[in-house]
Image (cartoon, rainbow, N blue to C red):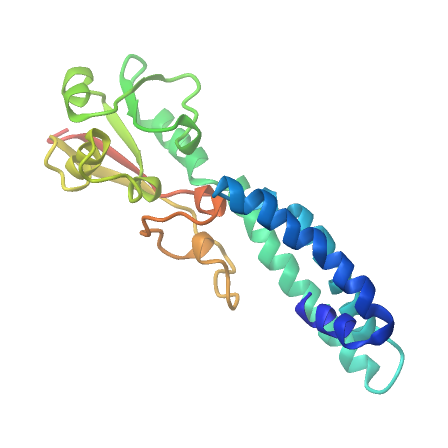
Length: 230
């Protein structure tokens, strides 16, 4: 996209159209993204749609008839293969998401009448359909409910303020000072994590407190805690 934009701006016959195509991108960011002060990945789809036009121009130049066309076609093929693996990582990790593995593990390890505790937004933890489960927002509730297993989205937990009730619960679980010990941890690896410049939130550790993309919520690190001595 960047090279296509450079080509379009460098040519007199395409420069004017290119500038006009950039106007909606700038106005969209200034009048919407910069106003609401947050940005989900899907919010950038209109920008990507316009930039794809410049990407198409770069691809046309790369595959145009001329000298060394075979090499240029090979380079274009490599670019498509890289893009396929890069984008396909999202689909693969969503299909093999750690939360599905947690549910299967619970079915094999929990009794019918036992309670599973969760904390935080439900969309970031396993669905727990068919299980008895309860929301555990703080240490006091943990002691009262005393679930057989307590689930924690460790990635999401890193962004929680430490001085909040929820933050103290997370610290108690992870430092094993709340009467619970870690018995299992789930996060499925990506088979092609070796791909250069792979998205950090898909393959690397997620310990940052500031979250910049919802890609971080795919295949989260789910920790399972059980009462100490169980």
